[in-house]
Length: 274
Image (cartoon, rainbow, N blue to C red; front, side, top):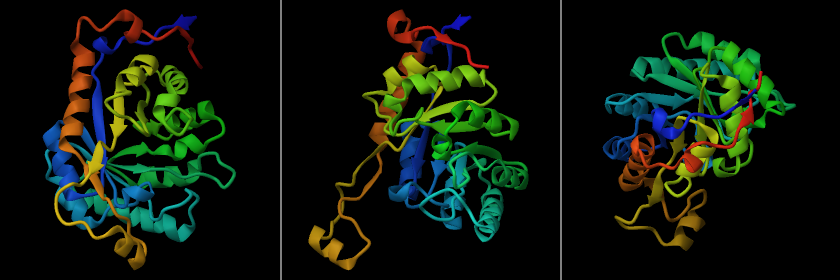
């Protein structure tokens, strides 16, 4: 039977902010984020944060999950890399974090359930989420079923395309299939300008965003000098408190505004997936 997703005003809408700096952690908390994904090197998609950064973030007052990713690039890992990931999971637990974010794929694309299960089993006492390695899986329905069977609590996805605003139909299908058994969180390119459309069209209750902006304060090295030194980029960005606050405020408004239109709040009917 066709099924309409719940309107935003009947569910809580929450915000996870991804950041790779101590300043970003503070900005996320001050802006009202509900949870933090902690990484290093966000510019390359994020890798495992340092122990020092994990310890600093653990005291921030809201739940923090650390990405466990030993290097940039693909998500197909060697035995040595998997051993590093287990050690990093221990570091996240010892630092006092709430959880971790993992992902692994076979070279052909599907999720590597064996590796993910190894990491989940090692993460006793921690919440375990999967990052956008999920979006590489050729069969999303099969991948969602695997994530649920593995006991993952959150699935971060763009719905298929590069950006969540273009993957609303996919996100809605994932929410329908999940039926609350795993948290579907929309991420990639989420901003205050497109958040309402993503929420209304997909039925997700969590959004994931960097809420970043260029750093305007402090001296900036000349662009040519930065490039000449190699491996550096000019025009750094970081989590912006005002952007976090704006997005968090929008979600609060969408969840509580009695005037939020039925047309915007209720997406077109979609078939329930098995």
